[in-house]
Length: 201
Image (cartoon, rainbow, N blue to C red; front, side, top):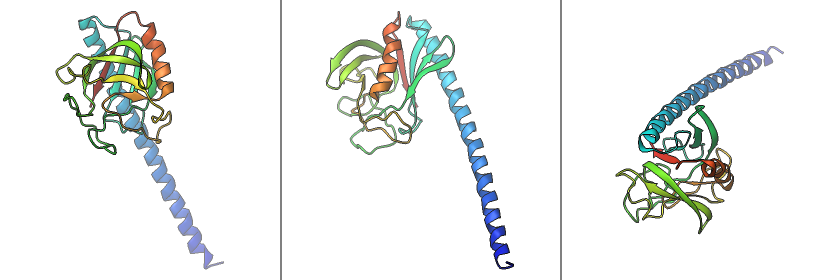
Protein backbone atom coordinates (compact mmCIF):
# COMPACT_ATOMS: atom_id res chain seq x y z
CA UNK A 1 0.00 0.00 0.00
CA UNK A 2 2.80 2.40 0.92
CA UNK A 3 4.63 1.58 -2.30
CA UNK A 4 1.55 2.45 -4.33
CA UNK A 5 1.08 5.84 -2.72
CA UNK A 6 3.87 7.73 -4.53
CA UNK A 7 2.61 6.34 -7.84
CA UNK A 8 -0.90 7.53 -6.96
CA UNK A 9 0.48 10.99 -6.23
CA UNK A 10 2.46 10.96 -9.47
CA UNK A 11 -0.60 10.02 -11.50
CA UNK A 12 -2.64 12.68 -9.72
CA UNK A 13 0.05 15.25 -10.45
CA UNK A 14 0.26 14.29 -14.12
CA UNK A 15 -3.52 14.48 -14.45
CA UNK A 16 -3.47 17.92 -12.82
CA UNK A 17 -0.71 19.14 -15.17
CA UNK A 18 -2.56 17.69 -18.15
CA UNK A 19 -5.77 19.39 -17.03
CA UNK A 20 -3.96 22.72 -16.64
CA UNK A 21 -2.34 22.35 -20.06
CA UNK A 22 -5.71 21.52 -21.63
CA UNK A 23 -7.31 24.54 -19.97
CA UNK A 24 -4.42 26.72 -21.11
CA UNK A 25 -4.70 25.39 -24.66
CA UNK A 26 -8.44 26.09 -24.71
CA UNK A 27 -7.74 29.62 -23.52
CA UNK A 28 -5.10 30.06 -26.25
CA UNK A 29 -7.54 28.68 -28.84
CA UNK A 30 -10.18 31.19 -27.76
CA UNK A 31 -7.65 34.02 -28.02
CA UNK A 32 -6.57 32.87 -31.47
CA UNK A 33 -10.20 32.65 -32.59
CA UNK A 34 -10.83 36.12 -31.19
CA UNK A 35 -7.86 37.48 -33.14
CA UNK A 36 -9.02 35.71 -36.30
CA UNK A 37 -12.56 37.00 -35.81
CA UNK A 38 -11.35 40.57 -35.35
CA UNK A 39 -9.10 40.27 -38.41
CA UNK A 40 -12.05 39.01 -40.46
CA UNK A 41 -14.23 41.84 -39.21
CA UNK A 42 -11.63 44.45 -40.16
CA UNK A 43 -11.21 43.00 -43.64
CA UNK A 44 -14.99 42.88 -44.13
CA UNK A 45 -15.20 46.58 -43.24
CA UNK A 46 -12.38 47.39 -45.66
CA UNK A 47 -14.01 45.35 -48.43
CA UNK A 48 -17.34 47.09 -47.85
CA UNK A 49 -15.70 50.50 -48.27
CA UNK A 50 -13.90 49.35 -51.43
CA UNK A 51 -17.22 48.01 -52.79
CA UNK A 52 -18.98 51.29 -52.00
CA UNK A 53 -16.33 53.32 -53.81
CA UNK A 54 -16.39 51.08 -56.89
CA UNK A 55 -20.16 50.45 -57.04
CA UNK A 56 -20.16 46.74 -56.15
CA UNK A 57 -22.39 45.02 -53.61
CA UNK A 58 -21.96 46.48 -50.13
CA UNK A 59 -24.20 43.77 -48.69
CA UNK A 60 -22.32 40.61 -49.65
CA UNK A 61 -18.64 39.77 -50.05
CA UNK A 62 -16.29 36.78 -50.04
CA UNK A 63 -13.04 36.90 -48.05
CA UNK A 64 -10.22 34.36 -48.44
CA UNK A 65 -7.60 34.64 -45.70
CA UNK A 66 -4.51 32.79 -46.92
CA UNK A 67 -2.71 33.24 -43.60
CA UNK A 68 -4.94 30.42 -42.34
CA UNK A 69 -3.71 26.86 -42.95
CA UNK A 70 -5.30 24.89 -45.78
CA UNK A 71 -6.87 22.37 -43.39
CA UNK A 72 -8.80 25.15 -41.62
CA UNK A 73 -11.74 27.25 -42.73
CA UNK A 74 -10.38 30.25 -44.60
CA UNK A 75 -13.03 31.26 -47.09
CA UNK A 76 -15.92 33.29 -45.70
CA UNK A 77 -19.08 34.53 -47.36
CA UNK A 78 -19.93 37.57 -45.27
CA UNK A 79 -23.08 39.61 -44.84
CA UNK A 80 -21.59 43.09 -44.66
CA UNK A 81 -24.86 44.62 -43.46
CA UNK A 82 -25.05 42.54 -40.30
CA UNK A 83 -21.32 41.81 -39.94
CA UNK A 84 -21.95 38.05 -39.93
CA UNK A 85 -20.53 34.98 -41.68
CA UNK A 86 -23.06 33.20 -43.89
CA UNK A 87 -20.84 30.42 -45.23
CA UNK A 88 -17.33 29.26 -44.34
CA UNK A 89 -15.13 26.43 -45.49
CA UNK A 90 -11.78 25.14 -46.63
CA UNK A 91 -10.25 26.64 -49.75
CA UNK A 92 -7.44 25.31 -51.92
CA UNK A 93 -4.51 27.47 -52.98
CA UNK A 94 -2.27 27.28 -56.03
CA UNK A 95 0.42 24.62 -56.17
CA UNK A 96 3.05 26.94 -57.69
CA UNK A 97 4.89 23.98 -59.18
CA UNK A 98 4.87 21.99 -55.91
CA UNK A 99 1.70 20.05 -55.23
CA UNK A 100 2.72 19.52 -51.58
CA UNK A 101 3.33 23.23 -50.96
CA UNK A 102 1.60 24.43 -47.80
CA UNK A 103 2.79 28.02 -47.79
CA UNK A 104 0.85 30.25 -50.15
CA UNK A 105 2.88 32.02 -52.82
CA UNK A 106 1.15 34.70 -54.87
CA UNK A 107 1.94 35.38 -58.50
CA UNK A 108 0.25 37.17 -61.37
CA UNK A 109 2.44 35.37 -63.89
CA UNK A 110 0.68 33.19 -66.51
CA UNK A 111 1.71 29.55 -66.19
CA UNK A 112 2.86 29.91 -62.58
CA UNK A 113 -0.03 27.83 -61.17
CA UNK A 114 0.11 30.10 -58.11
CA UNK A 115 -2.75 31.85 -56.38
CA UNK A 116 -3.01 35.58 -56.96
CA UNK A 117 -4.07 38.08 -54.37
CA UNK A 118 -6.26 41.14 -54.55
CA UNK A 119 -9.85 42.09 -55.30
CA UNK A 120 -11.85 40.11 -57.84
CA UNK A 121 -15.22 40.80 -59.37
CA UNK A 122 -17.23 37.58 -59.41
CA UNK A 123 -18.59 37.28 -62.93
CA UNK A 124 -21.05 34.98 -64.63
CA UNK A 125 -21.60 31.34 -63.77
CA UNK A 126 -20.79 28.77 -66.42
CA UNK A 127 -20.21 25.03 -66.79
CA UNK A 128 -16.50 24.28 -66.92
CA UNK A 129 -14.14 21.30 -66.62
CA UNK A 130 -15.08 20.76 -62.96
CA UNK A 131 -18.76 21.61 -63.26
CA UNK A 132 -20.30 24.96 -62.40
CA UNK A 133 -17.89 27.82 -61.80
CA UNK A 134 -17.76 31.61 -61.67
CA UNK A 135 -15.47 33.69 -63.82
CA UNK A 136 -13.20 35.99 -61.84
CA UNK A 137 -11.98 39.39 -63.01
CA UNK A 138 -8.86 40.69 -61.27
CA UNK A 139 -9.19 44.34 -60.28
CA UNK A 140 -5.65 44.98 -59.00
CA UNK A 141 -2.15 44.93 -60.45
CA UNK A 142 -1.51 41.76 -58.44
CA UNK A 143 -4.27 39.79 -60.19
CA UNK A 144 -4.78 41.58 -63.52
CA UNK A 145 -4.02 38.36 -65.44
CA UNK A 146 -6.54 36.25 -63.51
CA UNK A 147 -9.11 36.08 -66.31
CA UNK A 148 -6.51 35.15 -68.96
CA UNK A 149 -5.03 32.57 -66.58
CA UNK A 150 -8.49 30.97 -66.18
CA UNK A 151 -8.47 31.66 -62.45
CA UNK A 152 -12.08 30.90 -61.53
CA UNK A 153 -14.12 30.16 -58.41
CA UNK A 154 -15.13 26.51 -58.59
CA UNK A 155 -15.53 23.32 -56.58
CA UNK A 156 -13.74 19.99 -56.60
CA UNK A 157 -14.32 16.85 -54.56
CA UNK A 158 -10.74 16.75 -53.21
CA UNK A 159 -11.55 19.73 -50.96
CA UNK A 160 -13.12 18.47 -47.74
CA UNK A 161 -16.05 19.88 -45.81
CA UNK A 162 -14.27 19.15 -42.54
CA UNK A 163 -11.39 20.89 -40.83
CA UNK A 164 -8.14 18.94 -40.29
CA UNK A 165 -8.93 16.89 -43.41
CA UNK A 166 -6.92 19.13 -45.68
CA UNK A 167 -7.47 20.41 -49.17
CA UNK A 168 -5.74 19.50 -52.40
CA UNK A 169 -3.90 22.14 -54.44
CA UNK A 170 -5.26 23.99 -57.45
CA UNK A 171 -3.61 25.62 -60.44
CA UNK A 172 -4.27 29.00 -58.86
CA UNK A 173 -8.04 28.91 -58.44
CA UNK A 174 -9.78 29.49 -55.10
CA UNK A 175 -11.29 26.00 -55.05
CA UNK A 176 -13.82 24.77 -52.47
CA UNK A 177 -15.91 21.71 -51.69
CA UNK A 178 -19.11 21.09 -53.69
CA UNK A 179 -21.23 21.88 -50.62
CA UNK A 180 -19.48 25.17 -49.84
CA UNK A 181 -19.81 26.18 -53.48
CA UNK A 182 -23.51 25.33 -53.47
CA UNK A 183 -24.09 27.30 -50.28
CA UNK A 184 -22.10 30.31 -51.51
CA UNK A 185 -23.85 30.25 -54.89
CA UNK A 186 -27.24 30.84 -53.31
CA UNK A 187 -26.07 34.19 -51.98
CA UNK A 188 -23.98 35.23 -54.98
CA UNK A 189 -26.78 34.44 -57.44
CA UNK A 190 -29.31 36.39 -55.37
CA UNK A 191 -27.20 39.54 -55.18
CA UNK A 192 -28.53 42.51 -57.14
CA UNK A 193 -25.03 43.92 -57.66
CA UNK A 194 -21.75 42.18 -58.60
CA UNK A 195 -20.09 40.56 -55.59
CA UNK A 196 -16.42 40.97 -54.72
CA UNK A 197 -13.98 38.31 -53.61
CA UNK A 198 -10.84 39.44 -51.79
CA UNK A 199 -7.89 37.06 -51.46
CA UNK A 200 -5.18 38.25 -49.07
CA UNK A 201 -2.46 37.33 -46.58
